[in-house]
Structure formats: structure tokens, C-alpha cells
Length: 197
Picture 1: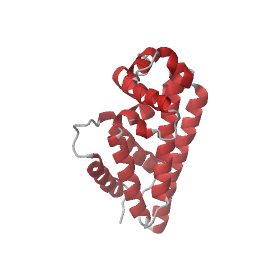
Picture 2: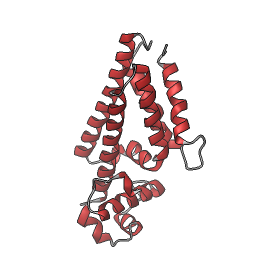
Picture 3: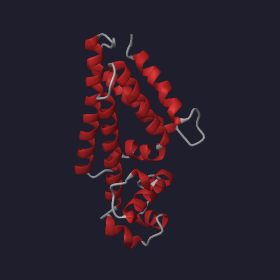
Picture 4: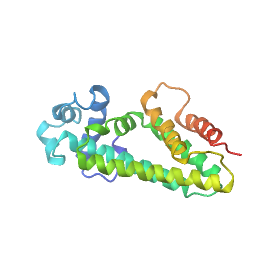
């Protein structure tokens, strides 16, 4: 799981983030202690404070990273080649597959927002707004070109993102279909919802 944060240095910080994901996933954020995180990473509790000033700082790093990845993913798909419908298909397929493949991280990133300190919460809310704006702009482009028939851009963009986000709530390693197939199925559902021609 440490491969989720290739830019985080040193390796010990990545290990702590991965351990925090496992601990938050098992116990929930509030029931997890810094000792739980450090022990799961094979370190002493004091070692955590070398890299993060608090448990909240670890959660913030995980959440910020996850939301930055989501924004980059949807921005890349929306700017790709093809029609608005082609790009929406790619966007939804990738977004859903990521939430399935990385369901444990995604669950924490998407559902532990209220535990973030206010400045970190504000930063994540801004990333979420920007992600929504990219999706809404793509839907708006599709409506303008006649590719989509949707009456409410805001509701449509929220629905598109909510479908992907919710996958993290229920997906497990034993779930069927596999993440890529699920992404393709959800892409079909979204295009139907948008009234794609």
C-alpha cells in the first residue's frame, strides 16, 4: 500500500500512512491511537512524531493525497480525446475502479472528513469542489453539444461522483465484479443517466 504515496519521503512516513489506513479501517479514526499506528508500522510510538505531529496530521496527509489523486484523475479524463460521452466513460470507469481497487484508503479519504482539523478540512473541501467543477463542466459541454440530456448540472455531477465514492463503502477484495469491470458497468449507467445519445 505504500505505493499510494510515491512522493512521500522517507519510506518510514509512507509506512506510517499505510499503517494508519489499516488501523483506521479496522477501528475507525477515533478509536485508533498513535500507538496503534506506530506498532502496525513496526515502529515505536515516538517514531510517529518524527514524521507527523499528530494522528490528525496522518489522516490529513492521507485525505489530501487521496483527494489530489481524484482531482488529477478526473481532470486528465475530462481533458482526454474524444467526445464528451467518450471522456465521461473514461472518467467514470477510472474513478469507480480506483475506489474499488483502493477501497480501504478511499473509505477513509471519503468518510472521515469530519475528523480533519479545520484548515485541512477546508483544503479537502476545496479539492472536492474543484473535482465537482471538472465533472460539471464536462456534463455542461455534453449538454451544449447535444450528447447529454440532463436538466440539472449540479445534481448530475453530484450523482456521477457519488456513484464512484459509494463503491468504497461496500467493496471488498471478494466483491464481484473486478474493479475494471465494475468501472465499465458504472460508466454505462452514468451515460444512461445523462441521457447520452
